[in-house]
Amino acid sequence: MTGPFVAAGDLAAALPGPAVLDVRWALSGALPEEYAAGHVPGAHFVDLDRDLAGPPGDGGRHPLPEVAVFEAAMRRCGVAEGRDVVLYDGGSGAAAARGWWLLRWAGHDPVRVLAGGWAAWTAAGLPVSTDPPTPEDGDFIARPGAMPVLDAAGAARLARAGTLLDSRAPERFRGEREPIDPVAGHIPGAVNLPAGDLGGDVADRVKELGGAPYGAYCGSGVAAAQVVLELAAAGVPASLYVGSWSEWIRDPTRPIG
Image: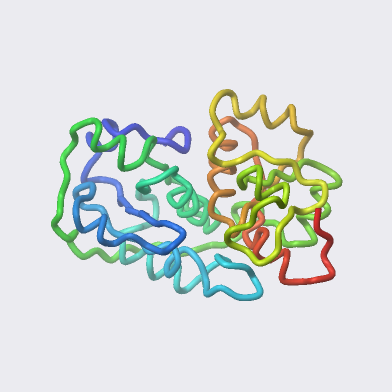
């Protein structure tokens, strides 16, 4: 596999080889009804809140999942040692990027995201299925630690010594509007690079914002995973602050920018 993205036509040509994961999700929760209405043939549905994150709490709204839970979920989807995995979602790509990042973090390298997601698949006129996939039993073994992770202290240090990217909307970064978390603002020293504004040469844009090392955060570690994915595609390594803003504000002694 080369690069973290795969085109819809290339995925279609590779089926049924890769394990395909449908991660359609919104802030309100998983979207299994969209999956049921039509999906890539053979794709397994993955619930981001249940399979790609632990329960909300002191670690934020989408903390790292328990390794055993994540491992079992991936095995149910046919993820196996050395098998290619392709993820897609129905939106910006952030949910699929969260799955990509977790698999890479867990040591599974042959994983890509469908470029353009579900919209690109349907726009290309490729086959759509409403049938449940054949049950699978992969042998995936999670080996955590293969991708760099930031905790709150590490994010604060990176904001001083490198470039910490806040991938939320500008008004949330500036603290003018906070529709999700109970405290508005940003981590002091962070710079704003919204996940929905990643067009153009991402590597050059990021380097204009500051120097290495790089890290990214958002509200709960989903949109920021998309930034890390786009940077990986551009050859720029970046750490992910998984807890992100929703964890940062759990400690009232942490400063607010």
